[in-house]
Image (cartoon, rainbow, N blue to C red; front, side):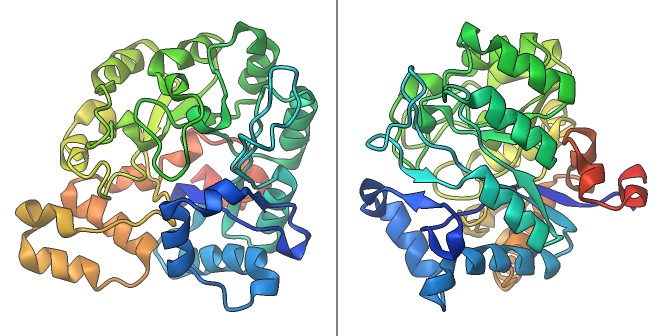
Length: 331
């Protein structure tokens, strides 16, 4: 059977287990970090990074999912290619992403490579050799300008290998601070699309309700008509920042046929917002699901997303034959 894949799950770490992960002092002062730490306090602080990866794998096993893409996170680099430790907020290096995926067969590697780093092409080649299924970007936080014309060689290599970029564009970012807010504009991804790069727009480009974001979803729909290699995921929408959009997206045939399933775990996902659509009993039944990956999946199913979104990732992700038995991918 075709595997069910969650294409949007976050690794995190503080540097235990020789992971190379790093969190900036400024980020640890953000309320989002404090709330996530409170909810996911490690039982063994000396092995917190390994424990976090193991928890993700355990949740995948406890759900109807077969795999989840574990995402890395690169830092901010100045335009000379040097790491900027002041504006960087978190680093989850590609090496740790691949190590975690070797340890846990339920996880697929989604490393992050900032294309402005001095060794970007070498770092990308290492990810290609390692079997990356996608590359993750958060432009407004990582100070990545997808429209920078100097990135042509980087994009051509992605297009040659078929590795997609999962990019947060369209709406604001809440978990991290935005260091370059203008870089989330959807028009910035036109250049890589024109270069033939597969793009997955996270959160279906949904605007944040309380941030006064312009609604770029109509633009996204027009871009999808032009570029058949433009996709979206439905991650990070059933939460306070974007919840009104999810029922509408689930009924939109054009969006649904290009949607991949994503949970955005550990970002919370709850059904309370959909009492009008699901009724009190439906909400209560969903909230009783303790595995939050499965709950997120069931919320989207209840709102009308077809199960095809769960099995569409093999059409888009790269190198799955490196991580999934060939028969499963072929089916």
